[in-house]
Structures are given as structure tokens and as C-alpha cells.
Length: 541
Image 1: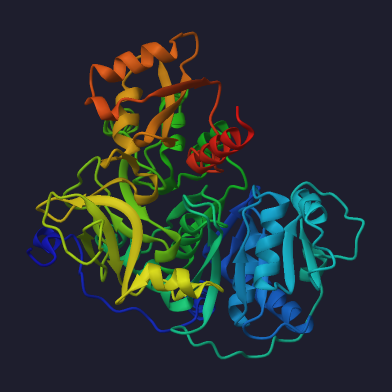
Image 2: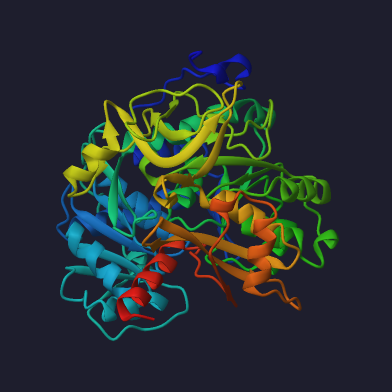
């Protein structure tokens, strides 16, 4: 196979170098260069780079006073806000490891992560403190810092971030950070298996990924030399997608971030109208909500030059309609926590292929390999597992050496995603390897069946899973949500599929539901439905 076919029309330099600095050091250099530029906008407050660095240093001094040493873990359970930025970079300055906490975790999952990492400090928004109590973590963590969100007072032995930042403190001690070896973030991901794994991401991993973004957008960034660029920071920083938006805005442009602690479409449109951001990272559901907003045409979206869509595929028709209606270009990309997280993106300047996740990021090698051994590289057009190699690939999984060995082989990260590459080097994600359904020896990718069901005029959402069957191994069960004011029976959905799919791909079971379980990003949680089915079988339902 031709080596790196994507380089034929590559929109950037594929080979590049990035600074060997800690994340704090690089941000500090940017702050020294642009001290009066706006770094953060939150609740109408505008915070300069100089003010931001001052607060980061104050919090770093607090960590030191707590006795936290290089390598100790600090768990963050904070929505997008200045408090998150100060807590994160204060930890980076002292060589601490940030444990990212999704506030939608169950108390059991939260307790597992905090105890698995032996976190010595926990920074948590006041509105989320009840979860800490449910998980019984007050005794498990030495230090708890409360950040403001709704203004609640906590009846416990805690510190308050606002009070900490008002107190003058000596300069925190200098800590030498090795960017290549020292872990910056533990990003827990359950993926499709439900087993929590902490991806160990170094300073170099995250900084390299930020510089890859800078390189892929370099020509566009240069057009704005000297101008203020604002990014609407909607994606939660506790996820690697949101975190990389935070890092990119602060490290590589630099640009100001409009911090959004929770997503409300009306508020999003008002913020765009008021501050005129140029960059809008999001997920398909966000762009679809904007597209279908009844008053979308009343808002001026001309300031937005780039919409970056990740987390899940976006229908090609929806991309075309969104761009036609708003004038904003959507760049679809791909990534995973283990790759810090971005590995692919459609170029802003160059050939975009809707439906594709684009070409590999600068400095990132990719291959499609066979599903059985993972050793044989497949030619363009064939479907197999996507594997990745590059400076953004994690060190491994926290406390899970066996899973690390399976995921990292001969320098390659095995993503678990089924994909294909076309002759131009553009990649297309087909499905998760773990989602694959085995029917009497046939491999079925749920997404193919889901796309057919979604074409039914009365279907709003669907997800398919494999359920055990004694004769065929697995058969397909589809969960379906209907559009408002429509009706369809399971039998009608099955007949619809029967007319459009080969026999073995037709769902044997269809369950109509009012809603499907979703993540904070609006992504359907397939694994939750698999667990439900397992419980049903155990109970004999």
C-alpha cells in the first residue's frame, strides 16, 4: 500500500516540532507575551492573561501549602469556569496529576476513580458536593476545595476557592517537570466496555496535540495575525475533547475563551451575538439543535469561521443543511482519550469530505489492519481496525498493565474502532469493534442497520445491540425513539428493514422507547442498554 497517501494534498506540514515544555511553562510564555489580552470571559467578566496567571500561581501555592508533592493526584469536578482553569494549571505548575471527573458519574464510579488514583485533593463545584457525600469521600481525600457555581455553603471541613485567591501567598516552590515522562492528566474512559480505565497523558502528549491543531489551522490563524480570536468553550473540560479546546485556545493561538458551564441553546446564540467568537467546537447534537432552532435566522453567526464536530458522526445531509443555513463550515474529526485526544480532522483549507473524519493530524501515522490478528495492513477501501502512532499517544492505562499491553503494541495504539481509508488517505469510521455483532459467523456493524432505521420517516433516534440466541450466537435488537406525533409498531420497523437489508442484518427484536440513555454530550449510551438486557435475562424477563 502507498505510504501515507494523505500527503498527496496535505494542507499543512506533516513533519513538525513542538516545544519541550510543561503545559504551565508554555501558558506562562503566552501570558508574558500577551499580558493584557483577554484570556477568559465568564458571566460578563473578562480576565486577562496576566490576571489568569496570577490566580494560577496563587492556587499552585495553596497546593504546596497542603503538602502536595510532584506526582500527587488532584481530582477536578468542576464545570467550565475560571475555577477549572486555575485549578488545572496550578496543578501543572507543581507537577501534580489532574484526575478528570465527569459530574454525571454515579457515586460508585466517582468513589472508584478517586480511590483508584489515591487523590490527595479534590476541587469540586458547590452544586456537586452532594455526590462527594454520597460516595463517602470526605474521609478519603485530605483536602477539599469548593468552587462557586450556585453559591451554596457547605457544612463540612472545606476550603473555598474565592477566599484562597483573595489571600496573599508567597511564590510557590519551583518544581522541575519532565514533559516527556511526567503525567499531566488521568483521563478515565469506559468506552464501550464499561470498565473504567485511566489513560495516562503526559505534558508532551497534550502539548503535541495542541500544536498539531495549530499546524492544521496555521494558514487560517495567520490571516488573523494581531486580531483577537475568541473560542466558545462549550465542551466540558473534564472530557479530553473539551480539555483540548481549552489547551488549544490557551496555548497555540492564543485566543480568549468564552466559558460556558452548561449548554443552553438560547444562551449559546446570545453569547455568539454578544462576543462574536470565531471558533465553535461541538458535537452533532449541538449543531442539529442550532440548525433547528426556530429563531436561528434572527441571529448573526457570521463571526464563526470554524465549527469543529467530534464525539460521533454527523449525517452528511445535516452538515450540508447547517452550512447552507448558517454559512459556517463544519470540520468533522476523530479522536479518543488515549490519543490526547485528536488524531484526524478534515482540513479547513483543502479538500473536505463530508462523512469522513478527514486525514491524520500532522505527525500522526495511521493504518487499517485486519480484525483477526491486528498484524496485516489492509489496502485502501477495506474495512478493519484503525491503529495510530504519534507523539500524542498515551503512556498507558493507570494500574492496568495487561490492558496497556493489549492497547499499545509495537508503538501502535489499537483504537478498537472499525474504519476504512480511501485512496486519498481520508478515513471513515464504521463502528466500534466491541459493538460488532456475530450472527452465525457473519459480522454485522450496528451503525449500518441504524442508518437504515433512521431513514424511516417516523424514527427520531435508534441504537442496535446484539443479544444472545442459542442457534445463531447473536441477533440484532433495535431500540427506537419515534418522532413527535407519529406512530409505528415494532413489526412495521422490522418490515421496513427487511425491504432494505439482507436477511441476516434485519433486527429480530424492536423496542419502542420514549428516550434513550445519553452522555453529557448527547451520545447514546449503548453499553447501558447492553447491561439492561443482561439484567433482564438474569431475572428471566
